Length: 343
Image (cartoon, rainbow, N blue to C red; front, side):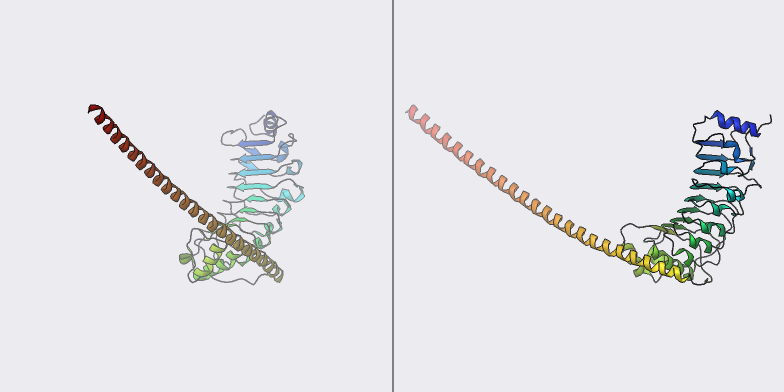
């Protein structure tokens, strides 16, 4: 039996116990396990929910439909045969997190069938086309850094997306308006091969007010010249800042305007945001009033305590003076008595 054969993987899987819910294999530490011809090899464990494969020479995703995975991670698996095509016939209803990183992936075709994905890591690959991602409507987290991406338009359909990493790509001519309808909380686009320009900054500023209330690491004055007042309105008007990182990109041309349906969604979202701002402003006013009332009460208490302390000190002085006076009278009386006896 050769090292790395199907039988060896089956034995390894079974040796970890039929009740195990997770399996981790590192080809560098366990050199006898370097090739995976089919994920069917792990189907002997009916409880397997999490599969983590690292540093393998060969990985093929065929047979994945026989697993009931919730989490799948492939890292540093530079296999030419690695493809998402096996997802097309698989009903992976439970798979909510997929991580394929440092694997040289170029084609995402097939990933669109993972309808329940919520978290997706695809950084450090060679991805160009993002079209297959546009059907992943439940995706909330997407990491695409260190690829070869230049067109982000397909991302406009990810209506649940909150976190997006796009840094270290080939973003040259970009219009960020496809992102302005998304509920983004964090957007990172630094280290792309373009330089900052006023057009880029203005475009980002148009995107940011939709879901972002504070910019990092920029200051309003330096990052967006001419927009200081507007930036401060957003920073001061909302109490739970969110973050957008947009360093070292620029816009050199503009794409077509977004569809009217998206504009309608934007207006509804603007209304909701405005209502939230009004509500927060009212709450801030109430809090400030309460704060002022508490300060006033505290000052009154301090003044009362100060007055009482002054009264206490004065009373002590009066008592002390009376005691001293009585003592003097007693001493005089004793002196007179002693003088009378001597006569």
